[in-house]
Length: 419
Image 1: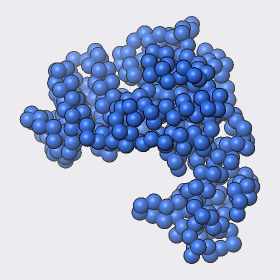
Image 2 (image 1 turned 30 degrees about the vertical axis):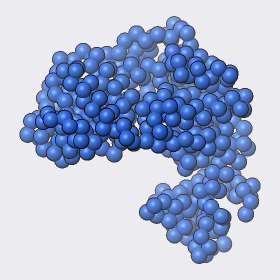
Image 3 (image 1 turned 120 degrees about the vertical axis):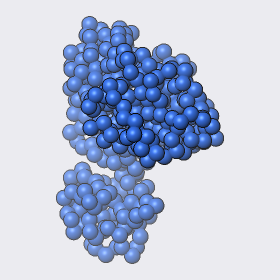
Image 4 (image 1 turned 90 degrees about the vertical axis):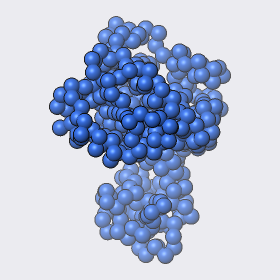
């Protein structure tokens, strides 16, 4: 079956699902495969649960008249998403970067939805599966799509751009994330700039932070829209306060690093003619969640939970911000940073040294990598369980606590300690 024929089936309801546990009536079920599952096995189940058709790529599961056999389910999903994007003919904003992608995407969506019917990437579904699913969640009512694109190796952003074909692009920053896959910081810059390459080749537009010298350098041949000049960071204690034209915006976001995320959303909102009062309203009512820079009060402690992800750049930014907060008693609990390749131990040693120089009341480091740094202090724990035992025997009280680590460390589990 040709892609236009599959599209005709899809366009009757604009629904796509890949998980029979969340199947919707009249959806198209795409039988994706993974290391530990084979969606082909659930094609008949999807039909019985209400899917109108199921797309498979293994002949032996072609057991129903509404099952469609293709060469490759994932490639068909990606091709369908691109076909849909071209048929919709709506404005697409693509964004990537080492840190702050998801928060920036959510802020942009909050601002633009004050005037337009928007669809944005859900959570961080920003890879070769998530981007197609984001596009296929849009329909004829959608006016602007905001598509987050993640990557951990070269050519990935280039490929995602070929699917979503953004009209505008924004790169949050270039930091020490996924160094193992990119091959160092220069590889990170090259990989992220694949978005700029797409915009350049297709005569599209980049939003840029002119205080980021890499953004300026890499966009000399592209049409750009710089951050609004009438914008200033006023305060971070702990929340970001800024001025934007005549508006004073009091956000619920902590950390100086979030100022640029807010600035991007203000600039993009201004370009799309969102009134300043509505931009202010959108940002002031935005509450971070999902373990991203959340402030949580537990018993006598104030906890800054930033346990969704971590790399050397975001870790340093979080620590610098935490150090500047006006709190008497401060504790940091830091978990391993993953995907750093051969620089991993060096980067973890640098974080320990940085923390020691800041002289917090307490500092704890947890994980296999931190335990290999040669640090002889008794504040390094190889496993989460050992850290947990220590904190149970030495409870923290009346502290401001920063908890940060890579997603795989799941440090949000520590919240149960402070009830």
